[in-house]
Amino acid sequence: MGTAVGGLLTAATMTAGALVATPSAKADLLDDILDPILQPLLAGLTDALSGIDPAAATDLTGLLDLGGLSLATNDPAAALSGALAADPAAAVPSTADSTTVIPLHVAETTEPYVDVSVNGGSQVPVLVDTGSSGLVIPWQDVGLSNLAGLGFPTGIGISGYSGGVDYLYLTFDTTVNYGGELTTSSTPVYVELFSWPTSATSPTDFQQFLADDQVEGILGLGSNDAGPGTSPLEAAGYPGVLVDEPAGELVVGSNSAATAADVTVSGAPLANLDVSINGGPPVAVTGDIDSGGVYGTMPQSVTDNLPAGTTITVYDNSGQELYSYATTSMNDPTLVSSSSDMDTGYVPFSQYPIYVDYANDTTTFDLPGP
Image 1 (cartoon, rainbow, N blue to C red):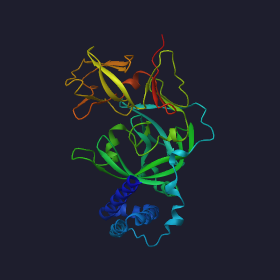
Image 2: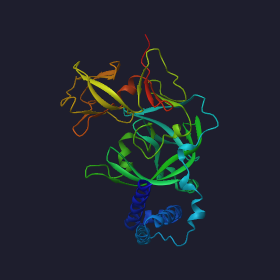
Image 3: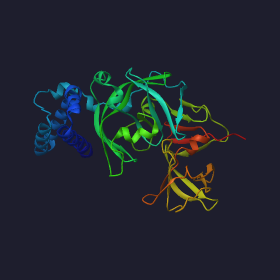
Image 4: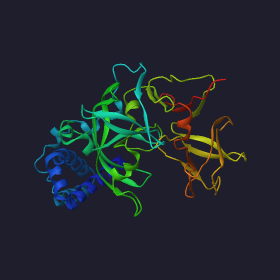
């Protein structure tokens, strides 16, 4: 409980600080849209804190008043109506047994994406990312009128991506349409409100972070990886999703590309893998099977040099080959010294269909049959 309260307090503090420094255009947005939404949430948080630490509740109230959020005009008990207690991942569709094919596109060779519509709004391209979890879309791409129609949020928090951007978000349960082929209800959507760089060399905001990907949001499909919340398709009760770049399909449901040569590893997307360089002895790594990882990463504990023409071969931890490729001047993974983890990047997804199994927390490489 202490962790949850601390996380919400951090989010509340960031919100108030942002209000103080927000330009007039964003201030108008907050006054018109976000202020009525955030006030009941933060008032409820203050009430909860007062029962634990009255001094902390007083400090939070003063901070919010400084930011222009008055808590005196709200009835948090009536406004919250149990929203904070709701679990976005608990929504289950009327049926999750069917298999649905959603058109999958690839931009810049490495960026798989599908189009989604939130709450009946315009379709926007979102990165298909097995290396994170949760559907994250900036408020600008949801649209002001559509944002106002999402109802009361079920949560508030802070998350981020390894590319160097953190963001504040609100969680809404709403309908999501995928490529005009599949619609889910009561789907958790994480609406990014503000974002900031994590270092001097990082993208300045969420939009710049995605600018080179030709997408406007991120569809995180992973199950045991970082993200603001649950994959929307896992939350909707579907057993899994197949990322089939060669066929241009994202298939929701069972593994429609299964073959006799399938290899399944435990974890989705984090799994114990072995990697060999130029036929050398395999080295154990924690692998992030990451469709959104571009060219991937390689720990320097495996190799400190990846010139063009280097052969990288990846195995499961029993020695079964999963995929292999030769590097070029363009597709070589980034060498990292701070971690023993390897990010696969797009390469295996460009070669074979790969199935993320939510029910069993596994990833299946649908290798060609004999």
